Length: 184
Image: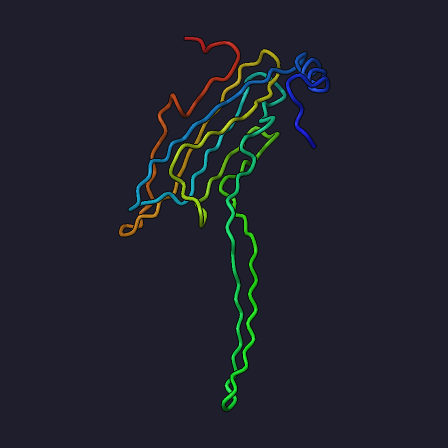
C-alpha cells in the first residue's frame, strides 16, 4: 500500500476533518552516540510520555519514524559426516546459506501517549553515530501539550562492569509542544 502524498485528495480530506477537532505537531529528537572502541554502545532507548492538562482525551503519537530499521547478513550452516571404513572414507556435507535480518531500531507505542524507540547493536552495525526520531503528535485542538523525555544507553565496560547513568538536563527532559506558554 502506497503512502499518501501531500497532494493526495484522501489526505487533504482527512486533514480537513481531523483539523476541526485536533492539532498535529512534530516532535523531532536527535541523539548522537560518540564512538569509543574500548566501551562500545550495546543498546539505547529514547522514551516519551505525553500529557495535556484539562482535556479528557490524552495526546497520542499518531505516527513514529523510524518504525523499524534492520541490518542484514548472510548466515551459513555447514553439516558434515565422515566415516572411516578401512581405506575408504565416505563423507556427506550439506551447506545452507540464508539471509538474516536483525533489528537495529524499533519504534513502539504508536497511537499511545507513552512511546519509545529502542536501538540495539547488531552483528553488522554498531551504535555509534547520529539517530533521528520523529513523532507526529495528535492532541485536542488548542490544548497545551507537554512531553517528558527519557534516554538510556548500555555500554560494554570491559573491566569494571558497572552500568553508567546520566540525567538529561531539564530543558531537554521536559518539552512544551503546543498551546499557551506557561505562566510565570
